Length: 385
Image 1 (cartoon, rainbow, N blue to C red):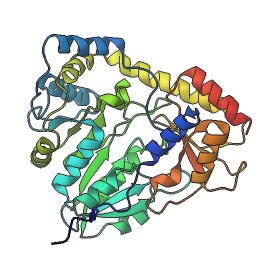
Image 2: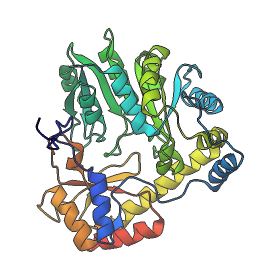
Image 3: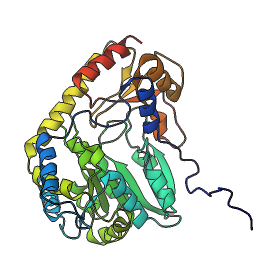
């Protein structure tokens, strides 16, 4: 018999190291200011950290329930009731997950079958398509209209066919920082009327909506809510991306299937952190302060680049700012980001990385969830280019 030669028939042959890891590594190698990877520089609230520590010291270090801490699920149900007047059964319709990405993976694995089509709006978070492919589904890419990153609903309607099983929407949107309006969700509701198409709504930036605009969750629309799996992340809200804690809401018949996968992916999620979050979730003043703080950082960053050669696109949400650089360079966005990091010591993300075909609009993404001093240093450098 022949010896094993190391050959593996890869399920994701086109997938390599993510652009976020690559650019962060390059920033480290060149001691550059890292405005590439999307994580906040601030630590979680001290009160929250202290509660996690106390829970560990008090012995809450074993498995949490598979579906998640009961008090946390109860408080999450109360939260969406207050924000969106949405009601969910705390026992059967809410699950605590190992971050938003794992919630997305469990959802797609559970609900997508061989040859099911899943519409992905681009530019898109990079975990959507691989999860669809691993489930045997077929990603169908629909590009948001450039440069406003809006949805052309007449064109979108043409992307739907009898094989369409799911539509993935990301609102507020990464990387563009745009938000869907009420009329967008109304059009989506009308478009899906009479179908069995599911909606996976990635709403992890729900609390980072600026200029007193309201986040339009799918939970606000009864007909959408009935067909939607809604994904959230504590990491984005409480500056604890490294804790990898997320959660999802779904009608009980969908959640039943999602939990079948969830229990074999991770079974359960960090117990002492869940217990701390259950208590801290009652601190509603924190969320208001968070939005104000991030909007101030956005305004500081934009003001700092006002006299640069970068052209800033509108930023309504998240902690990402898109910028055109056509007045600076004709290079592709990947090459330009490498040069920006190695030569000028500021790291950003090429937006082409968010497209399956690497569509290049000469756009880059900065993360402004950093200290004011870091933002000042970065804008000083960028204005000299």
